[in-house]
Length: 102
Image 1: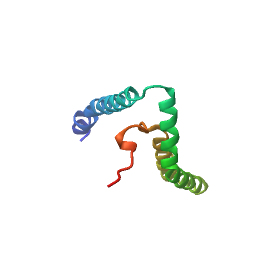
Image 2: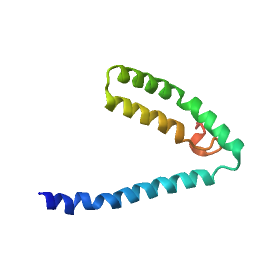
Image 3: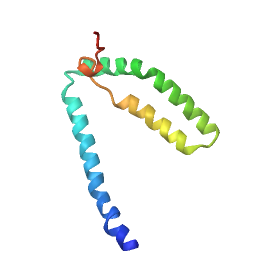
Image 4: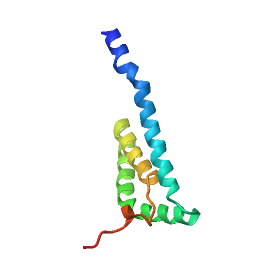
């Protein structure tokens, strides 16, 4: 069983980690290329924080409750959600950030 695990799943781990890191790098390089200057980055950050403020508030409350209960899993999940809301933002000039009006 050890050799089966070491020869299949464990052996593929390095390649899956490489694919994940490459995908993350390409995604953020593409996002960075769409920004024109610092003002665009700043406005996008502000508008995305306003958009995600309710999620950040609720996840921060979840982090506080999880910390009091010593629930590490919930704490880390809420922390990941907050960090994703902070780091993963689109340009305010892009179609993804625009409201669709019918």
